Structure formats: C-alpha cells, structure tokens
Length: 329
Image 1 (cartoon, rainbow, N blue to C red):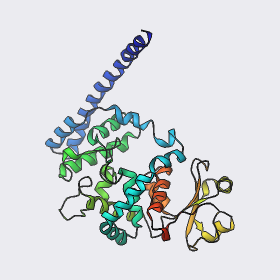
Image 2: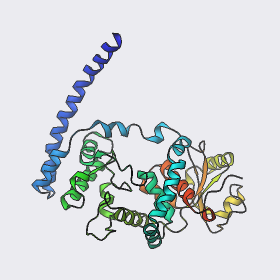
Image 3: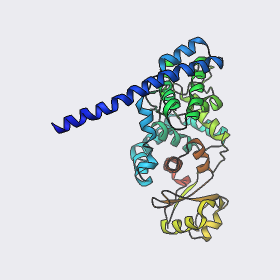
Image 4: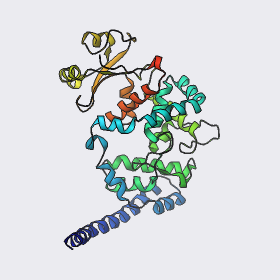
C-alpha cells in the first residue's frame, strides 16, 4: 500500500512540471514560428513545424546519460566492437565493396574507416533511429543544453524538408536530430551532403550511395589523409606515466620518438607515421598511439570513446597484412 501511495504522490508532484513544460513549449513554438516567417520560410513549412514540433522527454533524458559519463571505455568498447559487428562489417565490405572502394580511393580514406563509421553509427544501416527529428530538435532548442546549437539544427532540418530533399515521413533519427546511415546532423547534411546515386536528391536515409559519398566528402573536408587511421595499443603503465608527463600538450610525434620512449615496438613498420598518445579514462581503460584521424573523428563526434572505437573497429576490418593495431609488447 505504501508503495502505491508513493507512486501516486510522485505522479502528482511531476504532473505540474509536465503541464508547465508543455504550456511553455507551446508559447515557444508560436514565437519560433514568427522567426521562421522572418527567415523566409513558406507558410506550408511553418504549418509543418507547428504540427511536427511536439515536446518529448526522450531527448532531454538522453542528454543526461551520455556514455562517457556513465560507463568506462573498456565496457563501451565491448558493447560496440562485438564479433557480430566485425562479421557484419566484413560482409558489408564484400557486398558494398565496389562503392566503398571507389569513395575511399577518391577521397584518400581507408575503406575500413568508412565501413567502421557505418557500423558504429547505425550498425550498417539497421539502426538509424526512430525519433522524430523536428520534435527532438524543437524540444532541445526549447529546454535542452546548447539551445542555440539545436535551434540552428532545427532551422537546417526545416530547410531540408522545405527543399524536398528528404520526405517528411523519413525525418527520423537519433534523439539529437542526427539522420541517415552515417548520422549527419542537419547542418552537416546541408554542407557536405552529396548526390551519390545521380537522382538529383540527397537522401542520406534512403540511399546508401548518397550517404557513403557524403561521409567521404565530410571526412575529406575535415582534413583526412591516407594513413590517418593508424592506432596502436600500448603498455598501460608506461602510457599513463607519459600521459601525466605530457599533460594537455599531447601532440603528433614521429614513430621514432615513441620507439625511444619504449611504447612502440622496434618492428613497427610505419617509420614515417606521426602518432600521438591518447588515454581512455586517463589511461585506466587503455592507452593508444593514434594517427591524425583520431582528431578528425573527434570533429565528427566530440567523444574520445567514439573516435577510439571507430579506429579499433576499422583495424579489425582491415586485411591481416594491413592491420594497424599492435598488441603491447
């Protein structure tokens, strides 16, 4: 009985807050609609926004439980780099091999990186998200963290809808408004989206050729160069000591430097490689020497966990002769 009374009391306490949020959100929507009209949006798009923008709890809750705040990297890595994901990645490289190889060669990106990004972002297209993008972005623009950022993304999403590039019924994605096979946020769709299949549209959800070409274009624009996918697992104890010594000044150094420091085996074949030391959870969950691709991936997604996981999965997908991960000696 006490348990049920407690649940009822909690519901009564939460109800006014929910009503207040909904009421405030409706006022915000009307004000935002005025802004849309000032920015040249058609009345049809404004009406679409007013109908589609519904307050949702999902994105607000999701902002509070980001993986790097709740689990360590070793657990995160095991969740994402599974035998099944590796096997699916190798199959994807076979089935989409010609397309991936063409984009990889055209942009100077390792084909395994394009496959690994696809695998980490959406499990090779099987998990592109089911959250309504306009509703999620509107909620975050109203009540989330980084409200100005999400307001810009909301406007970009409405531009995409108004241009007819992505049908309204396919405007679904992650809780943060990312869409498609490679989970582009709307402004990234606008800046780097490419028509990869020649149908004069950029559909990053329904067309893998569009999504793949766009991913290659984006990585190239971020400065990706051949060889940037290198990653080497190194001795944790030595790595932590060097991390403490380098502090926030960690930078790319020649392979010879790391050999002399005792982190890189003498047999490491890429003498000209530029690598820097990165620690997951300050080294407690592993230390790695990474190429410049680590920083490029952190521009794609600001998470250290994400960047390391993409590089590690890419290495798993590489042919044995070209794998870039070495075990600590």
